[in-house]
Image 1 (cartoon, rainbow, N blue to C red):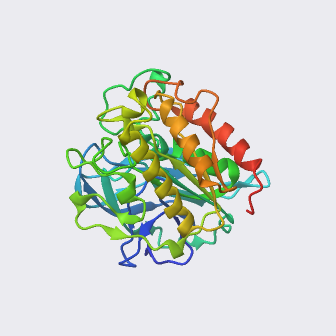
Image 2: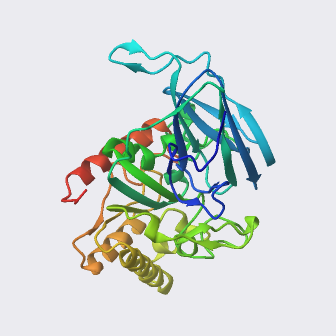
Length: 355
């Protein structure tokens, strides 16, 4: 039995391009579709467009996580083994043949994937899911927010290993971990290598693109075609995390060299403008500015602190982790992301947020 993308019993989360209701496009990490169903057969139909790295989808079936390799280009049908997975349990008894699936985007805009539907047993049934939580967060960040290289746990506290995308998993990003701890929905507007300003950072070299261009888009990687704006009316978070300031030191760490130089003053001005733009979209949201445990010079955190004070907005805050900027020379692994999520969720729960 074919399950079309528009089936009302499916649940979606994330910034999704619904221009074609029969072929929604997943762009950002943490974007997912969830389904509860009966039967012993499951297939997923997708179309991938890859730019770099190997591309994978994340699959959590009955609480067991695997990754699904995608073709570099084109449509595919992926069979997902169900027989070896026990049914979910309720009141201590197995509900034979009842399963729950979470199919999600592990990576950033190194690829875009179009979801074309599921197929289950002809005698199977798609079931209602519990309602989604009322709490909502949104994240603007870079590779750490996307969970890049998070599964390379043997390199915890060390530089990254050579990789081709296989270790990146948004499920293990501090962003999604924090959302799960808070029982919140998440939109994770995160892109590896991105800085605030166009012309800085690492994303889309040599024509570098910054978050100032990406933040209000659904499509933003020029390799996939023209950009497209996001409709902010579709999602209103109570909390916005701004995790920008780590890649901004490339190609020149001017904030470290002289925090009062014209470029440093200009960066703070543009960062403040960025916060004002977010406030313009979400008038009642708490905006929490952070960087991460990934090593960087403290001058960037001081710059963020100064801007937050200048905002003179009770709901704009700057949060520092215990090992902020000193935790690791490489991307955050699972335990380090967990450390961040624990501290951040505790801090957010302590705020007077109207969840």
